[in-house]
Length: 339
Image 1: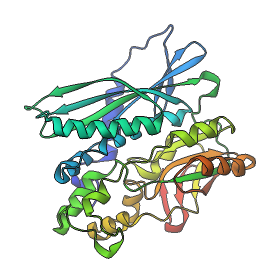
Image 2: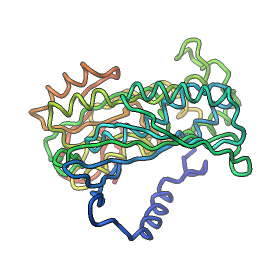
Image 3: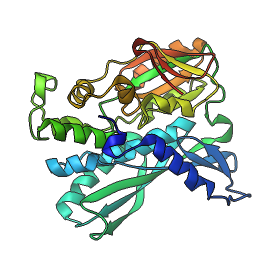
């Protein structure tokens, strides 16, 4: 099985986005003009850049509905946004959410709110507003998305142009799928004939159901990255989301990202790969495969960076690779290359 034949073609999506952007010609030219960006967009705001990014939970909400467990997807919604904001070196400040729902049941919205509140606490941000739209003719169930506001001094923006051969790639482990690849994951579970309420096979997650494992919240990396940025000159940060290792290409297309010490993917990934007969290349360009965030620093700063990240992070932290001359991303152990 592939992501594309379940209905999500990331390459087709990239082409569609390019076409959309090609029609957006107008840009403000004075105070507030755009400053570029990759994971998040930025505008000039005096000595600072204001940073905006927006994202949603995706089809993970369908599993939440099946399990009638909605108290963690708010964490996912905030995580997918704040983790993008920190990739340009920005500190998240505030958040607004958008809930499009067919039937606004209080017992559901209350649980969604619990997750949003927890995500805000973990990110040290304020939820300052939002919108709930009842759209029974458009929405079947609900969709949850949001937008994050962050800030960074202009001279401290991180876009990846300072990445050079010899730099070190430090990885922070994920908690599982996070909030990407769920269309493929759901189709695989359907194919097996299993239910989300069934206990996860092979005792890999003792006492947990398949649905509970798939609803594991996305890790939030704000605290450790903000601590790191205060002490270390970071060359690049990549949020490993949909697209997997190909996300590293957003940082710099003129160097080669060599992954020679990857994280061991959590058992949920091997379960999906086996049950769906998914090849390695597809797995590593659809899922995070155990690494939720990658940080690039100079070789001389790598040891100190590791100490800071390990002190503040609840995720596993380790050196996963290096930067070499060339182009693309290479996962040595499996012989995979992405360009």
